Length: 159
Image (cartoon, rainbow, N blue to C red; front, side, top):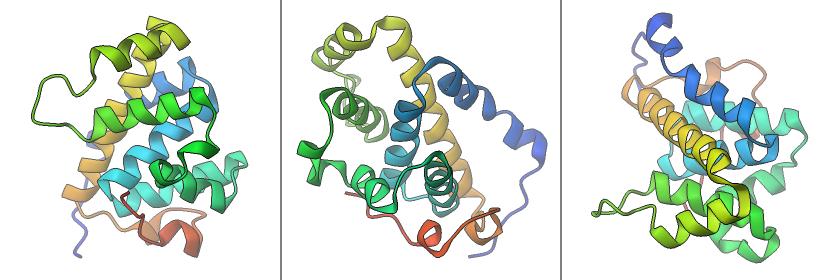
């Protein structure tokens, strides 16, 4: 892997959706979106960042791995956590249809959280997916991320 230079002004363009997510959702939900979407996309630098952030927030390594592979551990998540993870998946694993965020999922999410909150989750998921693609395209080196551990650097299991 040969990292490619990314000027700060380019990186800075991608922060507003992440800030919107952090300011308008529960911190646990924001971490769920970031950790899961990043695991699905497989961006090494974003995996290191979001694992580190989740650990520093207080999540155990075991819990982070369960979030990354949540469909294998679905019964271990609350109904609201599973709903946030389902939304993250729908917005990350785009199907060959304009309805990857189904009407059913939209209705369940807005009933549980309200439209404004769901909008914030969507904006955050779009933001983290954009950052993932940026990190992959520019082949950013996860070892250069501050305060990462060996755990943070290990490849994410995409399922």
